[in-house]
Length: 209
Image (cartoon, rainbow, N blue to C red; front, side):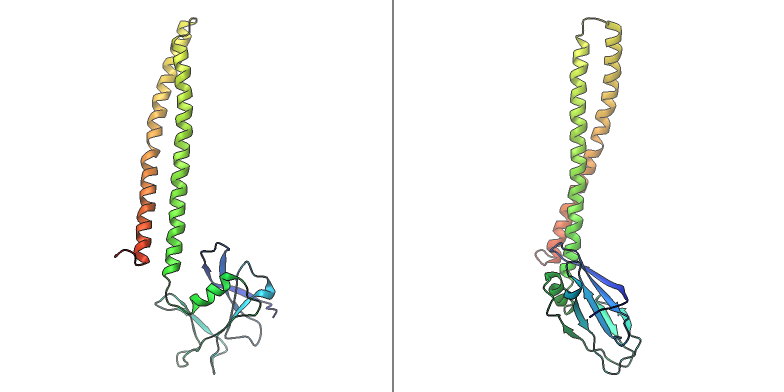
């Protein structure tokens, strides 16, 4: 099936990491009331199809998000919708199969857990960057300390070495103060990530809210 004109409608992300599964609406003539979805891993001939069949439905379908935050289809105020899922024979992508199951379920816990896990990964990544930066600054300060010690025992140019040593010690003190500033931020970021891990356990029912 060739669809000449399509527009984005909704997107879902899955744990496999292959990308988002994107739900699209077809505007090809005589295809009103049909929803198509695909995923970046699938080629055009492997597109999976979701048909929303409703006898007597309006030619201008209305889409809305209900209280459960699940994409819903409403052909009109008086006509109850009926749903029919028909996966294509070429649909081999795991994302697409998972998408079908999610469309039939009101349980969005896995989606929320996925979002929280991604947020946890970002927090630990930020904390890792901060820690690495602190290590690099500490290593640079250690090299400066060795140089200052050498200046203190340098036999000649007493005034020059003394002034240089005093200057480096002053800058070293400022660097040490700046070095201590990111450390609390790193600990706070890691603590925030651990709090999210606990919240994930609550979402999954392992711990009570």
